[in-house]
Image 1 (cartoon, rainbow, N blue to C red):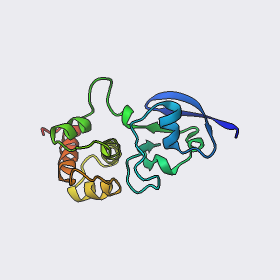
Image 2: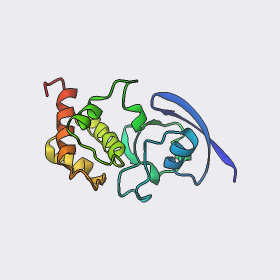
Image 3: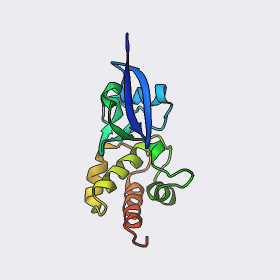
Image 4: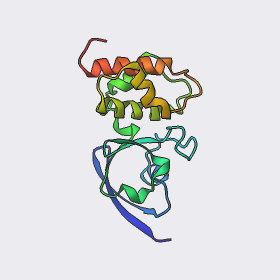
Length: 160
C-alpha cells in the first residue's frame, strides 16, 4: 500500500510522517513517531488509555486514522510536562497516589488536561462525568478525582 504524507503539530513541534491509510493514530504515534505514552487498552474507544487532545478536543487515538491528523495540533502525554518540570496535573496525581499499575494514567492525565483547559473550575460531578470514558482497574477513582480537583485549584492560582 502507498503511504500518505501527513504534517501535524505534535506537542508543540511540527511533525511530518508517512503512514498507511488504514493505520490508526495510536499506531502512528507509537510505531511511526515513537511516542509510546498512549496505550491500547481496548482498540474500540471504550477505555481512554489512548487519549490525546486533537485541536482542543479529547479524542481516542485508536478511533481515528493517522491520515486524519494532517493539519491538526495534537497533545499527547509526552507534551504535558514542560521539560523536566511536571505539569500540576502530573504532580497532583503523584501526590494523591492517583495511579497504581500506571496503564491508564497517561489517558487520565490527558483527559484531565482537556477538562481543565475547557473548564478550569469543575465541580466534582463534572470531573467524574468528564473522566467517565477513562477506565481504571486499580485506583477506584477517588484518588484520581481528588488529584483533579487539587490540580484545578493550583492551576487557578489557589493554594491547594
